[in-house]
Length: 329
Image (tube, rainbow, N blue to C red):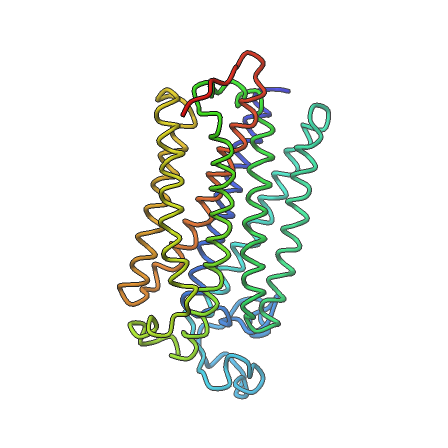
């Protein structure tokens, strides 16, 4: 495999991963701001390719024509364009995914799995686009929104695996000989904890969505009074997430040198978890500030992504013939 070709695929794939995370952030902003029905139809917006910028551009009966979402609500240009930009960002992701797939053709002769992983991502992004239309057609049904988000998480995981596999020769050079023998097991448990926390978080967000509608997206300081019991379980479980990942980061810090990729990933993991907890605390104690919810969502997705990448690094590093693991406590 040509080194330049591998580098090009890695850079393009990494850019695509960051773009997907950006879409997740934008989607969180759409949801937190109540802009999900800013465009009440799909793929057009109020029947137009370019959304209106004022109520004068809409038909007089738009309250009846778009009854769901606008029966008792006037046109809001900010919410409309927020949702429209969310859609444009999704289209951009589609182009990046296609370019990643095109670049992965170079691996057909050396590692076909890289190509087929990229192809799977491309097909899933198409399915994700269709699922987005279902979200609109079901008028933001909470379960559909959650499925839409979880699929994005799965797409990112496949992308990370495809890129890591394409760089397997480099990852095999990582020295993990001093890591504890149980490190991988704890890491898998930590990933499971993160998925469980995300699942509970989606239930909390579904409840918050209903509370937001009940309060007409105002009086955020009173939303907390209606939080379900799952919110308090979700909040308390964050301590388990924190200490489990701190153990992982500490063992990496103890066991690898400062130039090791794993140490940089460990620093990033701890930083993301602390940011997620601070965002969660602000939601709980500062009256649900709109900016905190999408940040909290993004951090949760990034945490799983970092954990999964560490897992892949450990998996490939363990295949290095000259490395003999030294159990530690």
